[in-house]
Image (cartoon, rainbow, N blue to C red; front, top):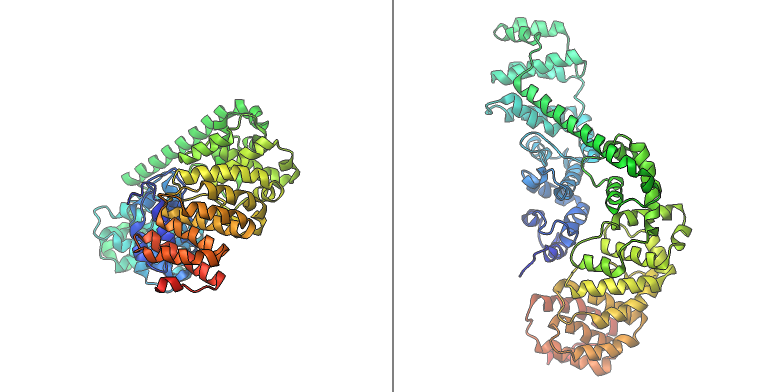
Length: 560
């Protein structure tokens, strides 16, 4: 079965884990998304649902994530997987770190670190792990000792030690780490590593970090007691910069220069357009770029706060931030927004319009200023903004959208009908806002309009992943407009070429509405089937218990 966009894989993983497959088996299905621009069921599972897994699944998940190369890519699309791994790692270390061995902890801490010791770790998770190590000096030393052990067979221990020490996540060193290094000198057979220990011990005195209990007198006494290695102390008095450190410093300088140059170019490039940004009339590309900075979507302009992100983005961060704050609020008023049909057409093609993010962010900001800022928008603009939200479909449903659901149900229903119908007929499994039609009372007015429309246009050859939408629509129609499915069920049951699984739903709906005249047909249809597919079997599992419990009838015809 073809699954070019991972949508089927995402639905199956959501259904099977953890009830039917364990964490180790689950990770066999982790790969770079086949459709990197699609935020569908597969990406959603790995970037959101897996993060909520029960604590007992974390150890096996983290064991499986060790040495996965996809978590070392400095790439926009891979960053979502990086974030998932970072979150699981921080949770796993916090919950299970005290119960696992040093070797296992060492392996976990290496998740996401590349062969050069470079680590793209989310700042919050990095600080969580560093903080955990800082209050456990014994575990810090144990991990550091394993870092040195990993270097014993390496041809260049100093370089490899730098890579290994990335596992410490920049945690502050224990207060007595200098004394610990000095003790390790005598315990270390490898001459190169022993010299590194001694150098680190001396450096704690030089920089007064981790030097508690250590003094020059103690180091001198060590030299007298170890005459064969005493010469190393003299060498430490000479500040000779090794070649690898020079290269490392050169790379750091080059990165800093590139970063500064990029910020300077952005500053120069944006400054002439700030007046247009402030009134929301700048180019769609620039408004989208600023919205991405605001939302922390750029890896080269991170920050815990919006102000910090803009400071990292350009040199005049405060000025650009203020202009974006004003201009994004005005984006929803623009007259050049794409039409609902254009937005839906792009979504069906798994694309998005560049106005989407700045407009959605602008609506969030307007709502924060007061609901009146939403009410005063032109109706056609509101329709386009609803379409943007429906085709976005991630994160928590915004308050302004729920306001429109309740206050402008006809408007929302029209857009939802157009979007959902096009998505279902295009074979898409993920369709936003169908699920709450049957489950959220606040959607009742919208469901009353939308459910009959979508049931009428529902594709007769639906994909397996679309049947849950059919179920939601039938439940909504049965609850709010029972006359409609009563008439429609008869028509659908007579439709030629409809897949077996979907027809079970229509038979069940007809039986729920009129068991006396339709129950026999339901069981006759089920009884004549020979479970032609897994999809058909799943439809029975989903529908028949609902029908039986609701109408309290017995499947007498199936027995015959």
